[in-house]
Every structure is written in structure tokens, then in C-alpha cells.
Length: 328
Image (cartoon, rainbow, N blue to C red):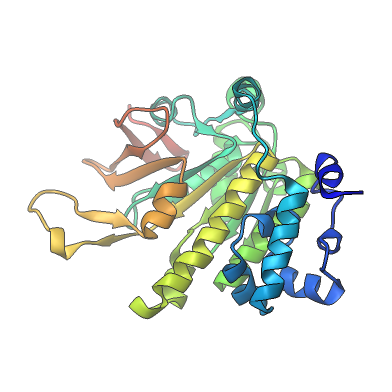
């Protein structure tokens, strides 16, 4: 069977790394340990990145990437009508707050990454918890009738918060907890590995939401100083690619939270000059970027900073014992 015939029948669920010409069990093990668990993740990588990450000679990496690209046919074009059909499969997940849903064009979209960024105490984690509950609601109530995976990088996950939120929207708290799968991660490699493990869970438990709270905190802690910036951004970029792939593969919503840092060189009195961490690598990969800040009288303000199909605008909401709710 030649490369074209193999490409026509390519199915990532069936093919193994050892199906790439030149990859034996030992090399496949190195690739998996480096986070390359399928052929597509290799095909979209550069030989230099693959060589460095997996610890294999550059000449070998070049051959592996070339053979992987033959299998997945990255040069194949689609008709616009087929892309439109795929886009129409995307759904919207309610946040449980009318103002936020309207801001987001109907809710958090599947097949996309939505980023909520802002300073401490602006509601990033609260929104994450609430979405882990609302994803379980019937479709007629804005849910996706699915389960959620919550990757906790900062120790902020609170199951008791899910209980209160579930009771408010009419879900059985015990069942709601059963449908949220969570893991506390401690390193960037651990974080990236858990996204791959999430795929295994998603196949069996109808996962429709993947949350990372927060996306960049461990990267920021591990890679300190300007000298490590390139390595950090490269690894972060590969991680985000995995998240996009998860969203598209399972028609799921991916939600990440992000911290911000100040820019003293651009200080303007009375104007917010903070920006989300991650630079262009994160900024260009996010489908929707929502900035959060504190408002008056315990309110929060959400603003769209980047979206392919929505205008820049703001919404006001509040957070109480019920969860993230509209201001009355």
C-alpha cells in the first residue's frame, strides 16, 4: 500500500505511531513520553522541535515528520460547503448568566478555546466551576448533556461549590459531582500529559467541556527569565495545539483561565495596562478572549477583547452563593 492509499484510509483512532515508516517501539516510546501520542501531533511539528523534545537525531526526526505528513495528508483542501457543515455542528454552552451568554453570542462555543483572563478575584475560577455544572443541563436549557474535565493547576477546585451551583440550576448534586472529572497537576509536563489522558476519558464518558484553571501559571513558574522564554513558548504552543485538537475532535468546549501581568512601561493613569500572560503564542491561538475586572458594588465586568464573529462589548454580572448570575 502506497502513501496515498494509506492517507485515504487514515483514521487516528486506528493508526499507531509504529505505523509511521521508520518508527519502532523504542522510538515510539520516546515520542509518547515527549507528548506525541498520535500521528497528527507529529505531522504538525517541526523536525527541530521533535528532535529536541523526544531526544532523537535531527535526521531521524526529519524522516519521521515527512512520513507522518504523508499519512495525514496535510495538503488536502476542503470545499467551503464542507467546512460550513462542520461549523454548523458547533454548539453553545450556557454560562447560567444571561448577560454573559449574550456577550458570547449565546454561550461558550464548542470546537473552540475560550479564555477568561483577569486579576485575582475577578471570577475566572467561579465561571469555570459554573460551566462544569451547566454543561450537564439538557440542551433545551442551554446545556450539552455531557460531562466535564477540570484540570486544576493552582489548587482552586472546590467540589462543594459545584454542589451549591447544581442545586440552584435544578441538578442532583450527587449526580453533578459524578459527571466532573478533576485532577490536580504540578508541572507543565504533567499538565500536558493530562490533556492526552482527557482524550481517553472523553471517548467513554461523553465529555463536552475541558477546563484548565489556569493555563499559564505552571509555565510561568517553571520557565523563569528571558533565557527560557523561547523554550516556554514552544512548549506552550504545542500544549494549545493539543487543546484545539481536543475541541474539534470531540465537538467540545475548551475553557482556560489566564493570569495577567502589568506593563509598567505603558502606564497611563486611569487606564488598565495589564495584559494576559503568554504573549502572541496564547493570543493568536485563542478563539475567544474575555477580560474580567471588578466593577462597582461587588459586580464583575466581562469584555470581549478578541473574537472572530463578535464585536468588542461588555457585560456586567455578579457572583453569589448561587454562582455566576445576572445583576438584578
